[in-house]
Image 1 (cartoon, rainbow, N blue to C red):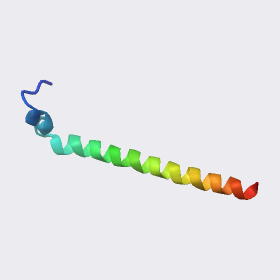
Image 2 (image 1 turned 90 degrees about the horizontal axis):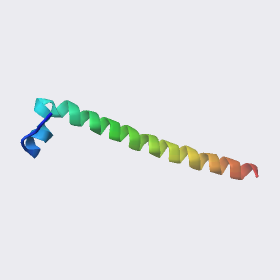
Image 3 (image 1 turned 90 degrees about the vertical axis):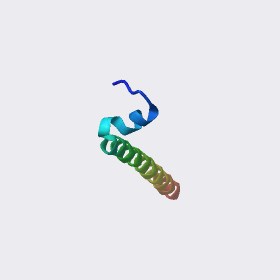
Image 4 (image 1 turned 135 degrees about the vertical axis):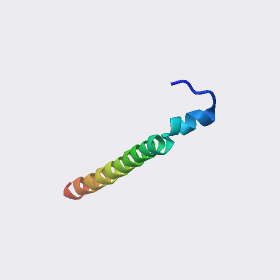
Length: 52
């Protein structure tokens, strides 16, 4: 697609709510997964430290 201006790009041909909403959902999912990984990693380190 070719856009004439930044506002046309942001509008995404009238589908901006769906396009940018999808990006937001994916970004939240990635941040949430990273947070969950960090929490599980810390819990695993704590569990291993107690056994040693």
